Length: 186
Image 1: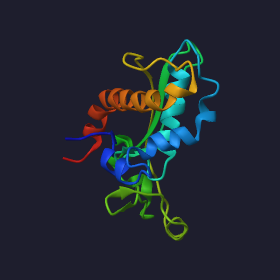
Image 2 (image 1 turned 30 degrees about the vertical axis):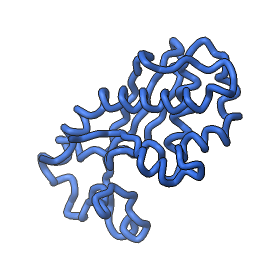
Image 3 (image 1 turned 45 degrees about the vertical axis):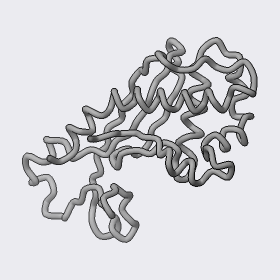
């Protein structure tokens, strides 16, 4: 079954110094990142910070499908709602694949794949052949259902961040899994 995002709980527990959660330790060490969100009436800012910390761990607390290049959660400037900006690796558009006359036999290349992962082509390859690497930018609202309220104090930040990330993974999977399945070869 295709999943676009998932939390690797086993790795998280195994790599935690306390034996519980590497992500929880990371959040506890970066409580200052949540300073502007504590006591907020909206859960959006808190969820965005929790997502940012979860995806910037190396390796990430949240893992992603090989087609995901970037995934960010943002506060919508229009209504303050929760939004997602996700960049996906895509195949060439049909307009480029129906005929290859536009290539003039110059050896155009697509995304390189190394060990099943899409990667940036190395400089030596771009010096030898032209590349066209298509992407899709998904900008979409996400529901607030299930997101924990922004905590009133530092004591509740860790548990709230863990819950917020789980909800965001669920909502992003609901949104993107059908699209990623469509993009994957049969």
